[in-house]
Length: 575
Ligand code: DQQ
Image (cartoon, rainbow, N blue to C red; front, side, top):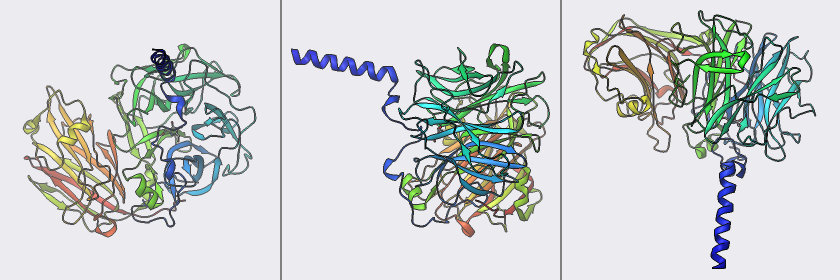
């Protein structure tokens, strides 16, 4: 009896401990899957197979989130989470590269690495802010001696060094520590700060309370002393931990970007969060009430995991910055892996950054548009062009000669007589699921039509990027898929069928697609950047000169290629 009673109290005690901290205090982990046994294993040689030619990556090892991107005195800086000792997540430092065009990169020494009590267990993600007087600073998350997540500042040692090579972490850190009611292991990733018209700086820190994801808001007069605003800037039930929040203004009209502190009439705001639960992101477009320290998404933006995404594929922990040189807002995102951790270790590298994209508000005001920065076009070499091509049911045309493993392709399709489109079932709410059911070979009415990228000669392997058009009650619904299910004969590789709906007006019967193909990545932009999908793929046959590119139509209705142009892409200087 006595033993039973003791057992009872132990169980009760354990229940309380686990419940009170959601299990988060048990270990210090980024949300990434952690493979302790792989963290410090370096491959003897880095295999060139699958390495991208023009996407951002260091010469070797693991990378994840883009950190603190900024434009300062004519130079672009990109910091990123980096493991100097292996190709799995771990030993994270802030690696640092600089560029004059965001295409060619020069690698510098890591800028921030664990060395002080306030970051001795890790230097995690964060953002840069340019303070008045043209002074850049970085806010980042440190994992302190007690394994708490705290927010620190780092300052450049020497402002006259054009590359800002060295950074100091002052001893007055940490600036922000979790309060008693905050989960100490779910409190990270400070945003770029913005200055209110009342003279106070504001910054967001990703956070959660039980299952409610939130962006905790902090204020400061001097950028050194920060206090927590009672309520978060915004939160949403059942979304879990919000990693890497990003908050910025967008103009109602035009493609130009706005500096992060701008808050005028004629603008909206965007809040993006990365969901640790799903490993996808979502954003809302809405209104920022500075006087109430509140952000309210418009009712046209779903405020949950089913919300709008920058990218419906391998894309996470993204961050924007204002490029004052060209007056635009630029988005960076981490294109995470489809290859296995063991194969990444054997290859000697894992992770890339997507091509930087310009982002602006669509004229509907309901969503963003994205487009690869123009500078990428400087890499375009020889091209091939197709005029009008009629693609009947089952039509397939090879685009050649082209270096299909390293290419940029733009195509516009024309579709006639949309009455023949298949009916849309209103229960189809999850585009990724729909793409899984209706792959490139499943015949429809209009569609699937699109591109077969990284394809082997006899189509044993291909990554299909395509559209399907459906007839809904009073409009057409367009589904865009980037389907990896046939991308590789290697069984161990992750092969999802990514998908998103495209809110495009089909009255002129035209829809465009652009894909940036780079050995193990296919980054696609539907309808001028309304819907974007990145796939990381690892074919076994369709590599280097054995890769091919096709346009196809597997719908019962014919479609036309109005124009198609594809370019071989040169290799820039990459770190
Ligand atoms: N990666 C960082 C964290 C962040 C996560 C750690 C998102 O700061 O929350 O490497 O990928």
